[in-house]
Image 1 (spheres, rainbow, N blue to C red):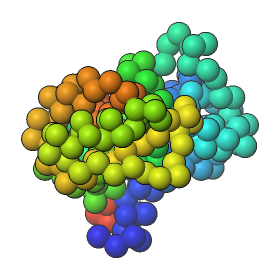
Image 2 (image 1 turned 180 degrees about the vertical axis):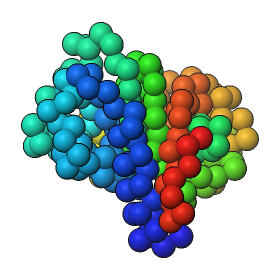
Image 3 (image 1 turned 30 degrees about the vertical axis):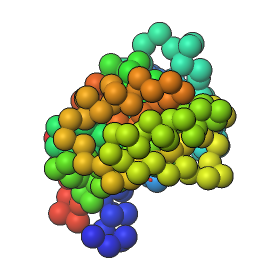
Image 4 (image 1 turned 60 degrees about the vertical axis):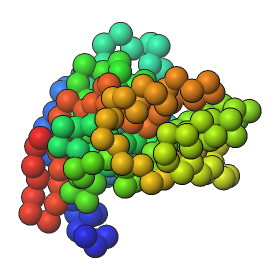
Length: 222
Ligand code: 5RP
């Protein structure tokens, strides 16, 4: 897949996600280029004034939303979050995801957990049978980084520190390469139990409820 066709897939998936928006609700908004396409569409399709506000998974998305005039709310102020829309780095057709390429995985996981419905928007290059081709991001407490990396290595992967990256929560990211994740729920649970791990970028316990896959051929809803 070339980058033009991936960009078209992202654009089509983002546009199709507008069908799930409802007037006067608070929207959960994720992070990344696919979500940026969605945010641009909120503006061009007249949704900015029709939403009550947004809860965002990153400072980058919050800034973009505020720039358009969308009120960005603290999740603690929101009793009822009906919809969260976000992209993914890798996805299976059972809607289990790898996320965190943009280092926003912790807030993404929190918002996905709090939302009644999680709609994932991806281009078709992201869809795989077995997760792990994309290195699995793990957010770690900085002082625990080397310990966590040693522990992760015992599970067969090759952990690499994403140097220079500090998350919005002040933590570090370790990307685990060379995994073939045949048991996503088990891997998520095992990695979660390592002391010092804040969040594992596997969304298996809380997968997306619906996935919109965009490609040169159009969209497919899974
Ligand atoms: C950020 C994420 C993003 O959803 C993921 O990286 C996808 O990004 P893009 O839409 O740019 O391909 O998990 O932490």
